[in-house]
Length: 499
Image 1 (cartoon, rainbow, N blue to C red):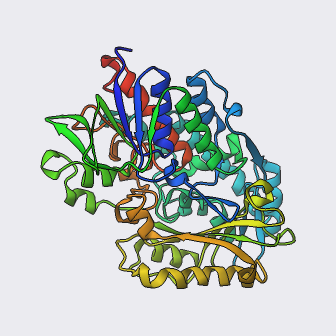
Image 2 (cartoon, rainbow, N blue to C red):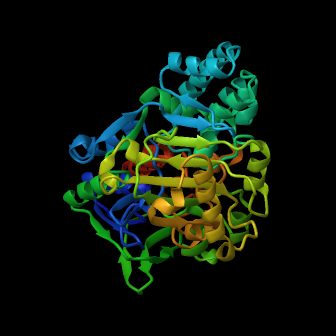
Image 3 (cartoon, rainbow, N blue to C red):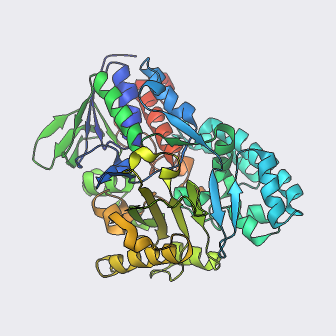
């Protein structure tokens, strides 16, 4: 492996924690810095009036990816946090309150299709065969680096053969006739900040990830995963510095030498890993004159994902008689128009499509006794759209709560006893996402794999990237895998380091 290195990781999100634990387990001297008062990045947990609200990701799949991190340190994940399997994965509502339970088992899915359009069962089975082919072809690349163009050339024949370059909705449309069912089987790009009408169907491998390994809830919320990771990191001798903000990555020629903090302190490093947004890192932490690639203009011209508006609320009553499940997706009637307004629009759409999380369905421990905890998420345009959020956010929050009260949660507003929200300025200022894009770059074919910022900087050979803005992309499994890729590149023998 060579000698142990002094490594500084900027950001304690899942990508930073994944790489830091693996490297600390190998004996490296690893320090994580984070500007906030708690670790977790997007997975920050808010504790308000006895409620524990997960700030960001709530859908957990592929437990093996978590297990590998603990195994790398000779530990068992179950000793740090527990996962409970969920079925249905999602309950998806049409605009009229009728719903489809998206289940793991194929027979259950076919029964649900039967309720909407029995004629689509045959098409669904054909569609599933194709998603399995897409998964088999591309899954092996999800935890391998894409540092050279020849890696991209290897997968392109498969992309073309399977039609995996087509927009996801168009791909589903080939097999499914019912309009609502088309939405049901093409929504997965929304989980990584992509428009189902544009995102290439290569990303249908997410759907197969879920079927292969299931969907889980982390007992105590996703915050329990962050606590488990940070406890393990501490046991391995790692250093976590909170309320500690990076000001600049220090460079000398084509090497980085450390990180200067906002307070002027300089942390020397043999290796720097940025779990900050990749666009933000280049644009704000490395002076433009030091960069041969990724000029400010190049970064600004890239295509960015949607942003998010998320309301967290706790009620003093339970809503166990509602139609709601643990994970709920509420689809608007004018869905295609809404997607266009979110991803290409310049103003806030009138219509709503929502993801409503109700984790107290599965875990009462995260709320006071007799109370219900919710999190509702609306995709909204990123900060490239000219929306004055200072003037808009409160009214938009009220609009979402009024919609839920009218359609799903009677007397909601009079029962709320804890409340918080985050909006695009939060993503831009607090989470340092360029343009407030919640998932970094749009998941398009020309911004995936080789065409995304690499896990090792093309210019600075000891600067590495983890998180949503690098390969393999957004979403918890991908972000954790980016940490694995970076850690393996850092420890790889020189002759393997060119992959």
